[in-house]
Amino acid sequence: NSMSWRDDKSFNGIEKEGNENVRNKGLKFTKNVPRFLQAYRTDVELDHESSLALKRPTKPQDEKENDNDEDELDEVQKEAILAYEAAQKEALAKETEGEYKKQDESVKAKRKAPLSFSTGKIDDVHQAKPPKKKRKAVKDLVIAQALTDQKKKATWQKLYYLIQFLFCIMATQSFEDIARQRRFWALETNEQQTLSPEVPPQWTPSSWRKFPIKQQPPYPDAKAFDKVLNKLQSLPPLVSVQEIERLRDQLAEVADGKRFLLQGGDCAESFRDCRPDLIEKKLRIMMQMSLVLVWGARMPTTRVARMAGQFAKPRSQETEVIDGVEVCTFRGENVNGFDKNDRTPDPQRLLEGYYHSAATMNYGRLLLDSGFADIHDAGKWDLGFVQNSIRSEQYSHMVSAIQDSLHFVHTCGVGYDTNLKTMDLFISHEGLGLGYEEAMTRKVNGKYYNVGTDFLWIGDRTRQLDHAHVEYFRGIANPIGVKVGPSMKPDELVELIQKLWPNPSATPGKITLITRYGESKVAAMLPAHIEAVQKAGLKVVWSCDPYHGNTITTDNGYKTRPFSRIFSELRQTLDIHVAHGSYLGGVHFEMTGENVTECIGGPEQLDETDLTERYTTACDPRMNYAQICTTSNLINMNY
Image: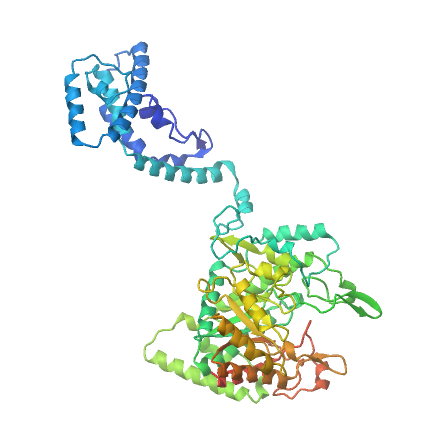
C-alpha cells in the first residue's frame, strides 16, 4: 500500500536535466509513503516541469542521442547554474538604472566573443549563442531559478510539515504509539511547547513535590502507588477544557454581581452511592434549588456539584482507636475503607475513584441530555418525602406560576428554547491527594488544566503559603476555591490570593473565597477579610459555607450540625456583605437528596434522638431535602 516518494517519471523534469539545486530541496522519503501523498506537488515543481515539457524539443524515435553529448549537457547545466547564482547576487547589488544600462552595453559589446561558462558572470551567459540544444537547457534552468525565493520557501515549508506529520503516522508510528504520546489529540504533552503567561515561572505539575505537604495518606508500597499514577496519566479526561473555561467565564459574571453560584453535594462520596437513583436525587435537589433562585431573584445560577470525585477528606488525626486497636483514620474511599479492617491506604482505590467518577459523569450527562432538567416538567420533579414540609406548598405555587408563564409565552408564538430543556452542571472536589491531581493535569494550548474536574478548592488545613498544595494550585488554569476560616489573617488572605492569582485582569473568575467561620465568629472575622480584599483591588467570588464551623458532637457520639446555627451564619454573612458594599455571590452546601436525619432542627424539628434513624453519611452530617428547601427561600428573599 505504499510506493516511493518520487519515481523516475515523476521527477523527469528535474532529475534528468541535472538540476541539483531544485532537486535537493525535495523531500527524500524513499519508502512507506502513502500513494495519496503524491498529490501534494508544489507550484515550484509543477511550473518547472510544465516549462520543461513545453520547451523540450521533440525527437524522432529513430534518432539516437550520443552518450557523450548527454554528459556534455550535464556539465553545461551545472556550470550554467553556478553562473546564474553568481550573477543573481551581483544583480541585487546594482541599484541605479545607469548600472543596468552599462551592463546592457557590455552585453552588446561582447556578443561576438566566444561562449564561456566558467567566469560566473551573467554577461558571459548571454554574450554568445550556444548550440540550440544547450541554449534550451540553459533557458529551462533560468526559468526554474527565476521563481521567487519567498514563494519556494513558503511552499516547501508547508509541504514539509504536512508530509512529515502524515509520514510519521502512516509509515513510522502506529496509532497506538501516537495515543501514548498525546493522550487525546487536543492534549499536548511536549514540555518544550510554549507556555502561556498564565503559567507561573518555575512551575510544573510535579513542582509541588519539593515542598512540605500535609494530609497525604501513608501508602506502604511506593512502587504500587507510582504504577497507579502512571496508569491515571494515560486515561482520558473527565471534563473538557472548553467546559472549564465556560465555568470560569460564568464565575467572572458572579464576581460582577450578575450571576449566583450554587455549589453543593456530599461531604464525601461513597463508591456504593454510584447508583442511578441517588445520582438522580443529587441532580434533582440542585435543579430545585437553582429554580428557586432563578425565579425569586431573577438571576441566572451556576450549578457546581460536589460530585464525581469528592472521595477524599482531610482529617485532624492520622490514626484513631477502634475496639482497642489503633488504625489509620478513614480518609475517603479512594484512600481506604470505612471498615476498621480496611484502613490501610491502597493506591488501587485511586483508580476505582476515577472509574466511579467517570460513571457518575456519564449518567449525569445522559440525564441532562434526555430532558431530565426540562423546566416544562418541573412539576414532575418529585418532592417525595418533603410533601409535608411547610415549604412544599410555596414550591408548588412557584412551579405552577412558572408553567403558566411558559404556557403564555408559547401561546404568543415564542419557540421552544432548547436552553429550557437542560442545564449546565459542573463538578468539583477538594484538591487533596496531589499525586492523583498531578496525574490528571494535562497541558493544552500552553496552559495546564486539571481535567479530572471543573473546579477544585484548597482546604483550610492545606492552605499554607510555603506548602505543596499552594504550589500545585498556583499553576493550574482551572477556577479554584479557597476555604477561609477563623485562623486566616486578613493580610495572609491577600497574600494567598496574589500567589494563587498573579494576573487577575487576564483571568477573571479564577478565585472563589469560601468563608466558613462558625455562627459565633462570622461577625468578628468576615468584615476584616472583606475590607482587606477590597483594599487590594481583588475582584473575587465570595461564597458562604455555613456548615464546617457549626459541627458539634452529641452526647450519644453523633456528629451533627444544628440547623439554627447554619441558618444564622448564612443570614449574618448576607447582612455583612451588604453593609460593606460587597456581594455574596454563592453558597457552598453539604447536602443530599435523600431523606436523612443528620442535622438537627429545621422544618421537621429533628432532635438528637432522630439522628439514629437515617444517619448514613460517610463523614460529616448533611442537610436533607426539607432543610435545603428552607435555606433556598432565605437566599431567595435576600436577592
